[in-house]
Each structure stands twice: as structure tokens, then as C-alpha cells.
Image 1 (tube, one colour):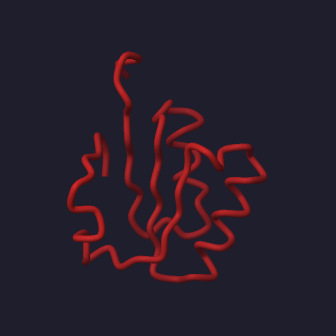
Image 2 (spheres, helix red, strand yellow):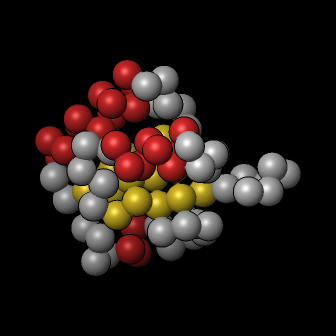
Length: 79
């Protein structure tokens, strides 16, 4: 990945966030967003992000993967 630009990834149906967190940890995406329809899963994912020290670079939200209008102005390098 190009280290001179911000790299962003979006994980749809992120569940507890394990794969989402791996995008930042192992693939070096600087900003990662996880979206899941289940609020309990998003709560767990946020706890996992805090546990792994990735809370600042990772965002989890309740949302429907079929309604990507949630991010109309954002661009992602990986979905």
C-alpha cells in the first residue's frame, strides 16, 4: 500500500469485527469501517477494537449492507 496516502477499507456485515480489525493490523489500512445490521454485534466489535488498541483507526456502525447511501461522500480503497 502507498504509505503517502490514507487508505480506507469498508467491511460489510462485519459481525464481531475480527476480519475488520485484521484489515488494519495485517494489511495496514489506516482507516477501517465495519457495518453490521446487528447492534449487539457492533457493540462486541467496538469492544474488540478497544481490546486490540485499534479504537482510533476503526469505526463500527449499525447499518444495512444494501443501503450504502450511509457513506455517500466517502471513498474506500477496499470494500
